[in-house]
Every structure is written in C-alpha cells, then in structure tokens.
Image (cartoon, helix red, strand yellow):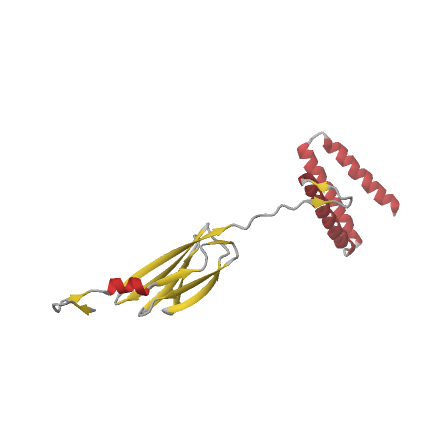
Amino acid sequence: MAYGSRGTVLDTTKHMDKQRMIFEIDRHTVTEGDVVEVKWDCTGSEQTTLTLDNGFRATDIPVEPIGTKRFRLNRSKGRTRLTIAVTIAGKTHRKTVAVRVKKIPTVKAETIDHRGRRVGAVGMWWKRVVTKWQDIRAKIRLAMQSMPERKQMALKMLTLIGVALILSAIWPRLYGAVLMVVIVYLMVVLLRR
C-alpha cells in the first residue's frame, strides 16, 4: 500500500499485480510433439498454479513464483492454453497464453512388389488376406499334428459337417452335393486303412 499526499491510502495492488505477472512462451505455433518453454515471474505470489489445457483435459501444476518449464505438446484439439494463476493478498489473478498445435502431416507411402511395380489398395488388401490365411493354416496344421489320430479325424468330420450345414442354409439345393462329398471322403478314409 502507498499513501497519497494528504495521507489517504492508495490501493496499488491491482497495478502491482499486473507488473508482477510476467508469463511468456517461446513459440505460439508448434507441430504435435514439439516442445514449448514457458517462463513466468510472479514475485510476491502466495500461491502459483500453472494450468495446461489441451482441449481434452486440463492439468493443474503447483509451481514456484518464479521459474521455467518445458512441455511436449502431443495431443491437442488445435489449440493448447497455458494459464498462470497467482494469489496475492487473497485475490486470484490469471494470465493465459495460447499455442496453436498443428497436426503432423501424414505421409502416404506406396508399396512396390518384387518386380518393382506399384501395388494398389486392392493388391495390398489381397496380400494381407493371403498372408492371414497362410498364418491360420499353419496354426491349424500345427494343432492337428499335436492331436491324437482319432481327434484329428473327429475334427475333420466336424469341419465338413459344419461347412455342409452353412452351405445348405445359404443354398438348400447344395445340401445333397455337400453330403455326397462327405460320404466320398469317409469312404476314401476307410479304404486307405
């Protein structure tokens, strides 16, 4: 507090608070993943809190009245706000700065086959399907080899009957043909032994 010329008390706290609140960032525009350095000087503060709000959530960090901090801005809704809140003489004062956070540009890569030709989206999809099918077949083959012979036979029969039922639900006329395939398979198995 200060005294005027006639002994009146002048309230200078608001004016002094604005002078005391120095709050700066080194950059106002960054790309996701970049680091921003924040500096503040709030001399005389009773309590100082730094708030980081990326649009998804706000985080409050108690800090010293004078200091610096570095933040990596990874996730943001386009703008991250940094706010310093200072309590002096029971009053809270805030200062906010905003950082524009740009998305990382996406890079579109092209896939080239063993002959050096560009592979399109359908070709890539088909390659993934074939690779997945080969993985499934290898796992089934490994599981079958570890089973006793009777269980292998039962599993093959269940698979054939399951396929027959599914196909008959889709195409009812196909039911007889699928059953004939099952009978032929069983005959081959019986005659082979």
